Each structure stands twice: as C-alpha cells, then as structure tokens.
Image (cartoon, rainbow, N blue to C red; front, side):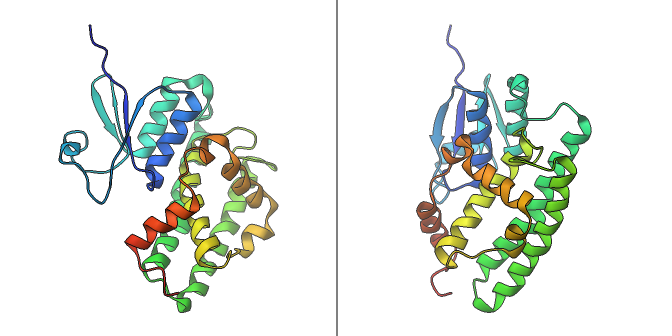
Length: 226
C-alpha cells in the first residue's frame, strides 16, 4: 500500500514560506521540499493552491496553505515542542505581536521599498522608532529578559516575525549603509529579542542570505537609485 507523500511547497525569497520552514525544522518534520518559482509558477501548482501562493503543504493527501496555519499545524503535530504556549492568554499575545509587527514594522518597510527615495527615509525610520518603542513594552509584559518574545521559550511569536525582520535587515545593511534604528539600540530587551531570533539555528538555516534577498528584491523594485 502506497503512503501519501508529505510535501512542502516553498520559495526561498518568501518570508511567509520561511515561517513554515522554521516550524517544520523545529519539530523535525520529515518532508519533501518543492521550490516554486514565484515569477514563473508551474501550471500544475494551481491544483495544489488555487491562489498560487506559497507556502502550501500536502499531508495525508490534503493540501493546506497559509503560513501561520502551517505553523500551528506543526505545533499540533508535535505539541511537546511547545511552539505555542499552553496559556491561552499568552497564545493571544503571541498572535498579537505578529499582527502588530506586520502592520507597524513590515508595512512601512514595504511602503518605503515601493517608493525608495531619500526624502522618505525619515518618515520610515520615525515609524519604526514608534513601533519598536511599543514592542519594548510588549516584550517586557512577557519577560524582563529574552532572548525570545516569551522569554526563554521560542514560539509562534518569534517565527511569525523573524523572516520579515531578516529581510528588512538585509535592505538596511546592503542598501542603506547599515541603517540603525534608534529605538532598537535604546531598548536592551528589543535588541536582545531581535538578536535572539536572528541567531536561532532553525531561522538561520532556512534563510537564503542577504545577497540573495537583495538580488530578488531588485527584480521587484527599483532599489538602485537611492
């Protein structure tokens, strides 16, 4: 009797796909990996995900999509790893920091990349200073020390943010002369958290590298005339 394949459809450039990759690495999930070219998607991929997005995951003959859904699936497959905290309030807070980071850090970053001009830099960094000041409060609500959102426990909160932070940092380092955000350097708990998620093996091992990120970003946006 044939056994249904477990297949992870991903793209190295995609921060959403990296979320799932991190979670699968954390739980030690064995699976086949299929790289999808997002600029030239194969016609058969619509049968896996009609929306054409990554990540997607085939398990037990069923196709599942959306990055955070797959992170929570990973937790459910191996709850003993503890990617989600047991406390329902902490679970909600973990989900909240992902949403906050997306709207207050990632969104301004994408906006800046789409209109990549020097005159927009101050507005961008001001937005990040405000965001990271609030993030400092959210981190301290959980624990006075890190290196993760919940303190010593690595979780959904860190997975949901890390892949976007790494790509943002690549643009800061390679395109903006190692741009520093004042609030990150001002608040030790913020700095410890960002350093903690950046150095986590599952995150480092699933990240394609700064040079690759910038190479692909330059195909999406005109980032050469700052």
